Image 1 (cartoon, helix red, strand yellow):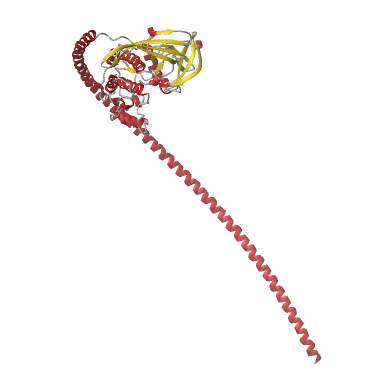
Image 2: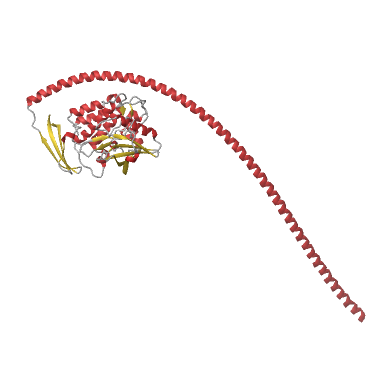
Length: 473
C-alpha cells in the first residue's frame, strides 16, 4: 500500500490536465516539484486500484509514486513530476518538432521495457490495458519516456473480460468481451508504434472514426493504414507492427520479444549516459546506432544540440565500415545464432502452446462457473424484481381505488351543489315570473278600469246629449 502523507505538507498550484478518473495539478512537497492527482467522486474502486498497482512498481520508465494524502474525504496521489508533457501533445501540439525514426523507436522501446517489466512482475504480473500516447510522458531530458495513469491496471491472474481502455487502441478480444491476456497490451503498443511512424491518430483514414465505428472495424480485422507511415520507416518495423496487432493473440509476440527485437536492431532506450549539459539552456545528445547502408549495416553517431527543448542542429557521422572478411565472419556467426534462436523459439512456442491450452481449459471452467453464478444471481434478481413489481402494482391499485373513491365523492358533492344551485335559481326565476305576472295583471286591470271609466264617461256624455235633444222636442 502507498505511504500515507500529511496533506498539510502539500502545496497545490495550477492544473496540468484531466482524465477519466481525476485531474492532475502541479505542486510542491518537501521542497521538490511534484505532480498531484486529485480523484473525482464516486470512483473508489479506481482509486484503490491505481494506488495499489503504482505502489508495487519501481521502474525508470514508470512515474514514481511518493505516497497518498487525504483531505475532506478526497484522495490525492503525490507522484513524480515529468516536465516534458505527454507524447500525444508532442505529436499533435501547436509546436510540432520533427523527430527521427530512431527517436520514435527509442520511445517505443522504453514503453515496451516498462510494459515487459509489468508483465514479468511476481507474484502477480500486471496488465496496463490503456497503452497510448496520452499516457506516455516525456521528460526534460530529450528522448526519455515514462508511463503514467495506472487507473486501468489489473493483476494478470484475475478474471479479465471487461472492456477497459481506449477504443482505437483496444485489442479485438477486449472489444468482443472475450477473455484476454497480456497480449492486449502488445496490440495497443503496436497501434502506438504505427502512430509514432505516421504521426496520425489511429483509424483517421475512416470517413467517420467515432468510437463505435472504430471498435466495429477493429473487431472485424481492419487496422490503421500502413501506407501512411513515413517513407524512412524500416520494413522490419512495419512487420513488427503487423505482428503486434494480429487479430489472434497467439500470433502476437510477447513484450519481452519486442524488447529483444528492438535491441537487436540497435535501438537505444537509455540515453542517460550520452547527454551532455553545455550551458543552462543547451544540451548535446550523442546517440550511437546501427542503420542500413546498401546491403550491409554501418554504425552512425547522431549528435543533436537542443536549446530550450527545440533541436537547433543535428549531425550524422558514419563510422568507417568494417573490412569484408570481418563482416563475413560476423554474418556467419549471426546465421548460426539465428538458427539456434529458431530452435529455441520452436521449443518455447510449443511450451507456450501447451500453457495456453491449459490456461484456455482453466478459463473455460472459470467461464462455466461464472455463467452459472451469473444465472443464479440473475434468477434471484428477477425474483426480487417480480416481488417489487407485485408490491408496486398492488400499491398502485390501492392508490387508484382511493383516487376513484375520492373522485366519486367530489363528483357527488358537485352534482348536489349544482342541483341546489339550479333549484334556487328556479325558485328565484319563478318568484320573478310571479311578480312579473302580478305586475302585468295589475297593469292590465288598471288599464281595463281606466278604459271602462273612459267608456262609461263617453256613454254618459252621449246620454246627456241625447237627453238634451229630447228636451228640445
